[in-house]
Length: 135
Image 1: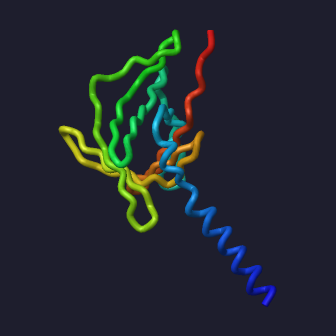
Image 2: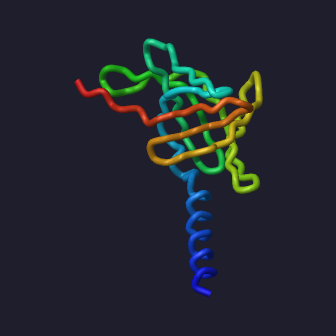
Image 3: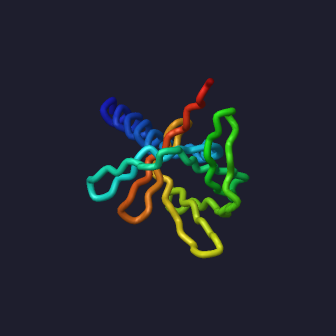
């Protein structure tokens, strides 16, 4: 009986841990691409000046745009804004983007306050929260 109870508690803890790898309420804000993985290869961004993805979420809808940090701590934003919806299917969250030119989706593989991993086909996009530059 003790083994069975122990096993039940252990599986319950594991179940809670795996389902909490996506904290969807933490998506809003700025995210900097750290690297991309595809077929066991790691690709680093080559841009000299960083660009961030800025998510504005009013669940289940939101807007995504690209921003560039400025020296005064503010951001310069692109004019293009991509609307999206967040859907939960089979315990997984997906972001469904829709622009004038294309529709695509990405699975949210991992999300906490400092790290975001989005998957699309064989690619995984690894993001981190950007650090502010203090002058």
